[in-house]
Image (cartoon, rainbow, N blue to C red; front, side):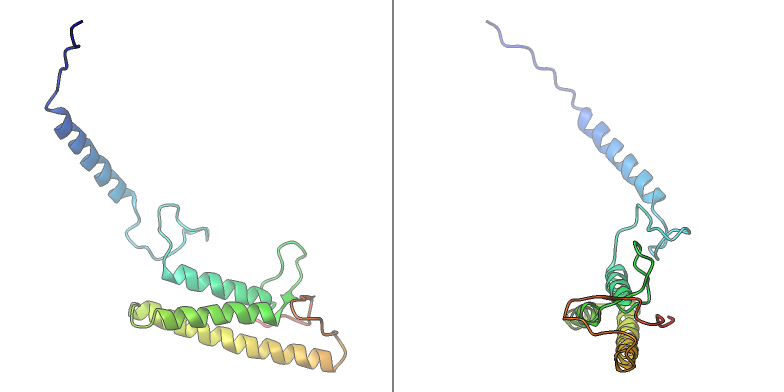
Length: 156
């Protein structure tokens, strides 16, 4: 038996490389010029990579949710769980400490401002809950319990 004849096209590598470069140029031209955030409708851009500010925003949103600022999407009522809110605020503090010296000026200012605002909101909500308990408007629950509709939610 004879071996099959192998025909090698030496030009295929240069054609493949040219196609790869053309596709890379097309992809680069489609990406947004500014990775500043979400699209006009509030949803993140599909082509945009998540960044540090997105992580900070995620933790802040979770904290605000458990502080009663954002109503539960299912019940429509504010949920207050100081334990859960503290967890997310503490995670922001850890993130700030562990990234110290590795952030841009904008990122550093953002996490400091966000953390300050979250801590202030936590104190204000804690005071409102304590006052409501003292006045008998709500009953304290065991740790981990969530109290729906604990008075008016503070305005952001």
